[in-house]
Image 1 (tube, rainbow, N blue to C red):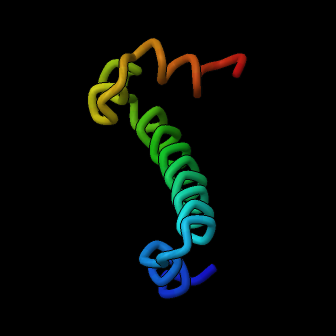
Image 2: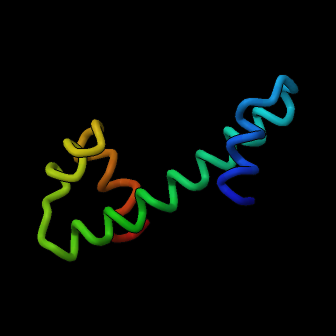
Image 3: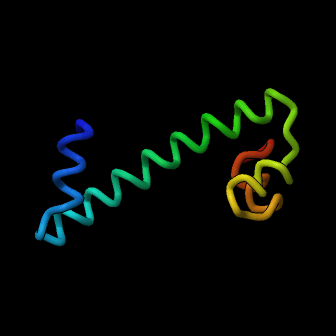
Length: 69
């Protein structure tokens, strides 16, 4: 789905179309988050620093991306 297509779907008056767009945005956000958490860890960031940057607890981010996930 292109950015323009997604943008049009977000503005749709049809709730089904809009909700599918929300789902696509959530999936995209999860992918971007995973990439940047991995980069931050590779640069030596602590789980606390990453959690602070994302506005969540270090425990929740570690549970999501830490070893054994």
